[in-house]
Length: 186
Image 1: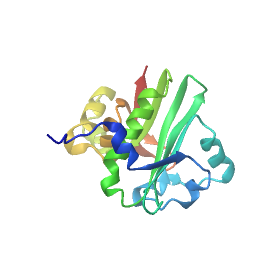
Image 2: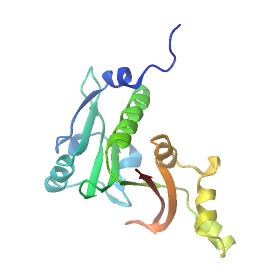
Image 3: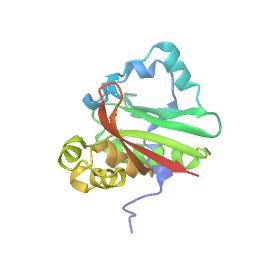
Image 4: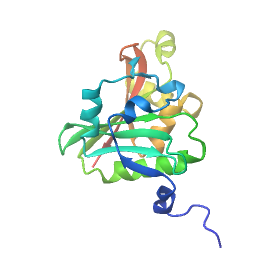
């Protein structure tokens, strides 16, 4: 009988996974939603790109046939060997590569060895709820942002990656948008 969900390793083999080269961050054809990071330009200079590439977890995923960059991702260790922030820059037209990419990143998150890992994901705007109910608690905001109808693609992906939703961050980042802090505690 054919296994509808083959082991993760065989799915990765379809992707061309390489250590992140700083130039990959400049050459990836980003999804529209990836043009800004936390409300500011997602462009980084060579020094910033080199810093990310020098981290223990820093990968580029490419299509095996054309070598087109599908995604750049990694963990920026804010406190080396202890804590870090996971990040990803997704290319356009992920299509059939989304599942194997997600599974590879799930494994990297699981095996990173850090005591604390964080991830920031854009989430639904909670300000209208606060205007309607000024006494709403942070926990109520978190639960509301996690309702299936309110989950943004970024929140759905963070959950798929195995991260735990921790807190809604109001008016966060360069554009004062709502984000959700996710964490993974080892």
